[in-house]
Length: 490
Ligand code: PEP
Ligand code: MG
Image (cartoon, rainbow, N blue to C red; front, side, top):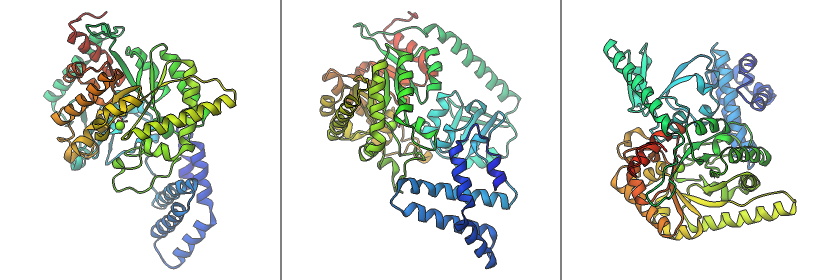
């Protein structure tokens, strides 16, 4: 087991995790119990799994968040010992060392956040769908991915060559010569179109009345800023901060967050950078926060709900955002809002953070506070929310799953999970009309914001900001300009 731990790539795995695991592995409470079980003539693997599971359960039952989080560490240690006993090694995405297509039943966002994405040539996964976070992260890094394959992953396992079309969701197993030629022609056509779209990079589309239509980037880390700028992003419309939290074993400090938010703000100033407060829960968990077992995590303790209960996590983020606001055009938005009260409570916490910072004589700025429209509740009370929010950003990934009652991770209901369904479009239009009537900006940061077939509809509903993965920006600019009959880049 020591060997298994030693072989873990130190550059890609947090040292703190490794040393925590080492300590647990050496704990006599575990080793003595395992030996005692083996002396009772029990199978060594069973003994290890039972003892580590019992220890993990005792960690998860104590009323201490730090100790709760150790439960997963103990289970990980149990797995490592079993691998060593059978002479095999665990495979983690962070151990990929050559260009590979990843084939999995399921992939955690936490695992993908720590993987060397440059070496991942494609992702095939039994679970999930086009708007699950694995798909979004893959898209952001230009990695073709097809999720929701279900039982057909077994068939993929038998193939020697695999080609993936992330756009259409097609997976070709051992393609013959004709199929290969067809795929290669499509790759050539896509790269020719990409070249042609570069002409739109510096365009700043406007409506006929002169209002700027901001085509912004969705990012999840500082490393993505360059690609966003290169693609011609007019700011950031969604900075998913939970990805920063997922990369580390412990929660990032206020100072570490401040440095990241300030760097993003400076990189795009004077264009806005919309930073979303932590949206943990649903299909995203992090190691520093213990989550209760939930029957329906997507209907559970996530987004602003969790933050309002965990001021020890929320306040450092808000303080970091206030401090970073002194360095550029930062706006802040709240995920998973479903009541006016949630927004008012966040406003009160922000005021409290400001007086703390004033007392500490720390420099800070102010920011516009917007909300995501992701729940049917938010749609139905959009005009009330528009009185307390400075802007709306429509999160179509969640809005679609909640309006259609069709889990964004469940391939069996992927036909229902369709943003173009009239019910979802009606919800988008209701929210947009309410925001426009109240005179606040309405934007969109769900995956639908990049769809050329839907962009004209969104513009007609009054949206003036669309945020998407950087690779989609030039096409969206062309689409907006042609909607307003400004066909040439300018
Ligand atoms: C959304 O729900 O549309 C959204 C942008 O948020 P996320 O995909 O991170 O849940
Ligand atoms: Mg969402």
